[in-house]
Image (cartoon, rainbow, N blue to C red; front, side, top):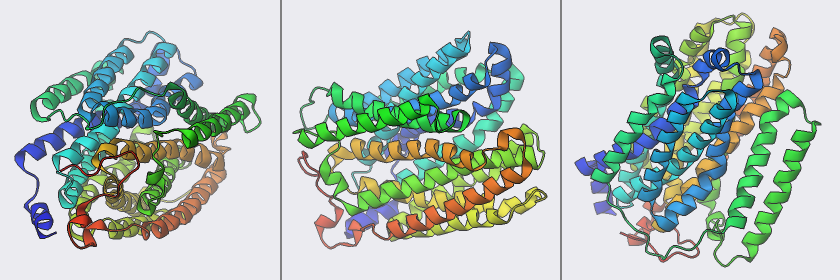
Length: 486
């Protein structure tokens, strides 16, 4: 274990730093498009004569495809190689971004946004696999690499509204999509220059289309129903149909998985308490954050009367605060393991939401600074630790599947959070300030409860680095795997 710790203290080598930078390119462009589009919606609506529903799906099509297909992309990465899937994701994202820039109506734009989501799904889990491979599965180095990776994503999220505003002012809304093309090209070139193509040890099996289709339908139908729940209502046929379709597809998927000789989701993953705890932790963190950001955007503009630009600037601590905490997390995890920063992060995050229980219709923006700093500080400390814990539970050949399960759960939880917390402020569209304030408080209360539960789940994380001997550095073996690669 001493050699493991000494290598961690030495930091990343130059080559490892280049690989982390390259892998982060995929995360940067995928996260940039989460926030940059929001500032362009008004311009898109005027130019393409898009309805409110069309603008909603301009945002939602990306998130839905991202969440629904990430698991499949992780499995494909395990079977055919992480670098191959990562490059394919960059290529598709670049082409889809160009298609967004040339879209002539809302339908074309929504379709192109869905393709962007597919490209992002291919990039995200496989970029984590590339990080894991570059660090030789060293716990400390992996923690530092994941911290830098998440910090890059945090910067892109924070910069999105500002970069988008500047690009729109100078070149129009189409430029926010065209800017992705050179970024993706740079990522592709860097991947071939600095990342070695490591082929999986196991012979690639054919894709099981029925299971992949059922998994995609289940998640797509459920998330779609949650997205439409607020505007259409619970009893609308589309919402009921989506929920029923999701239940049927999920039931079919489970039945096939239980009988399969090579399941998409290895059962051993879910028999590991560290893996399960980290998944629940990620669900709680994403659901509360994305749900609350939605409600707070209504609060800032409809209750406090701020313009969209002023609201975006007010949100800067809530998004930009991730940078320092993400960087600090890598150092903390390398020294103390994953469990402690996950617990502390959840508690700090909960404290930030607790402060929002006291807002009202006359709360000054400066009073929001404390919760807007506590929330990303706690989340930024806990999420890299959570990711490191997940990667430490599986053999390298299953790292893509494990990271895809984690990020699929988080993306879906974010979409559900927007729908659920939006329902708590159901009269927001009518401009009822008292109802929006009530929605903020109710959402904050739910968030505190969920994050306290996340802290309890984090206590279940087992620190492999504290064990003795070489086995301390070996991840838990997963069904259908051949052991650890070094």
